[in-house]
Length: 194
Ligand code: 3AM
Image (tube, rainbow, N blue to C red; front, side, top):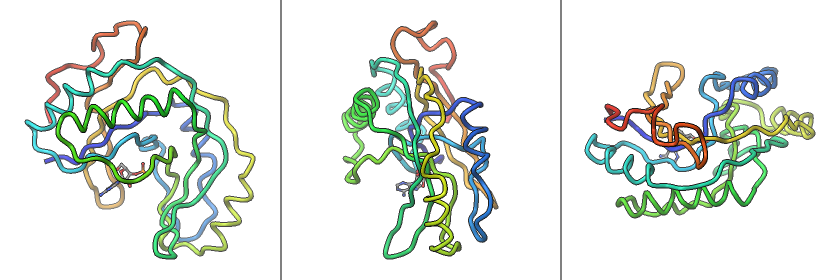
């Protein structure tokens, strides 16, 4: 039973720019560039038949393409421990709109509401074993990181399989935003196998 999440994949040039940031913090476990993404909604372990229903719900979403701007770094902490380092995404109306559509669609399909506030970000590293002062300096040193905006033309349903070192993420289905060529799922088979 795969773990699923809905996210924006990132284009290769942006992933390269993000991977240039990686390094220089002892103990940090850097996310491999092929795994960079912006999570819109974590779903979790899902039976195949449920996954099909969620896929149907996501396929019904209509939202416009938009520009995604990443800017600056930050950390997430829990119970006084910094567990991850990320690049922030600027909040924008179209991003909020898409995230809210995803949330509504998944709730209609039967998922319980997500309680946590949406904080758009791209995780760079897991940092529970890194020194907090090193992490804070790193965030400050890259305060002005601001890659060119990228066009968001689709979002994806990802599966996550836990590996020894890193999770393996796979875009199972792509959902094109409005006005994209081949708007009706030419890129992604409806009957994706989960
Ligand atoms: O997008 P990021 O890297 O912040 O940490 C996981 C990752 O987040 C998160 O879902 C994203 C894709 O795997 N995640 C994993 N398990 C989770 C859980 N039980 C979770 N988010 C919420 N609850």
